[in-house]
Image (cartoon, rainbow, N blue to C red; front, top):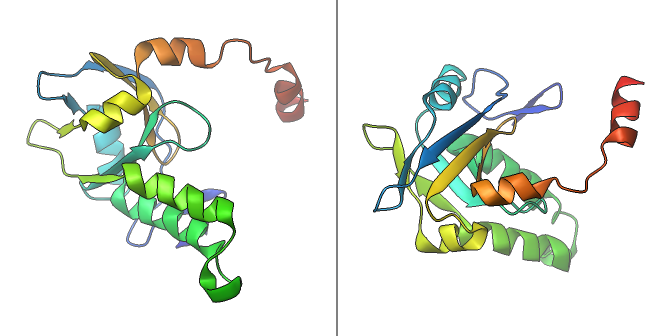
Length: 168
């Protein structure tokens, strides 16, 4: 795994990936949803191929995360490295629990010819996706949100201090 600034460049990838924007798509009766064309094109242009991993976003937000497979493996390797140096490579309980939760909800996906992937019942239930999905660009992955959750997700968050830190 290489670093390009603060961005992860997965082995085989040509460069950083910075997915931006949001796109709302409907689930069909088989729980299929199209990955936004703009995201698919950016991912392919970064040399990532067409295999993805969909998992629960474990950063505290109630959404799913869709990674190009190589980027997911790079992130997983970062977390796994936190286990190194501990007795028998077992690692801290929090690291083991994080890896367990991540792997329990992860699924490898290959889009069909229309660019659609199928969400499992469990994935939909975890984040309350029922009818529509909002894809939100989040750098090297796309977050998948239930529209209601996304609208409520940042309520009450004050960005004033953070904005001062960033912009002065």
